[in-house]
Image (cartoon, rainbow, N blue to C red):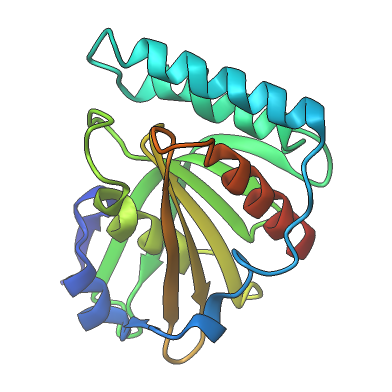
Length: 207
């Protein structure tokens, strides 16, 4: 009998067991978040400074939940990065489904943000306050990325809680392998949204 799992409840342990998922712990595997990053314009920096100021202001009035994060941080960030323009377009609440090779287990779920051309997934940690680490969304986004079309062997993702950001790279194949970037925190000194936007722009060039 086929067993169905909800993507939001899937654990890394299950993905490792079911799909042979492996973590790659070498810097060479995921250089895209570090190398050849584009420079930001003064206008982009000014807008990112405003996003940071708005986020810090709203942190004074908890709880800051998913819909607010989307409005205050993620949507403006994607707008500045031109992710609402071709070749990208946004799909909300897209259903996904993946199954094991023996077809005995199917994982089903819905993703908050999917930036297409099928190689770049962005998700917000669902139904949690932003105090949660972005690590809480790693299991879920990897499940979504594994469901990308078979023609897409290299897939990128970003997890955000609004206050923190982390990027993910997945190479599919017989043995899927993944790696993560550092975690960028809006509340750190300076403005780490600069780094986030530069990485977004770099990945958009690759996808």
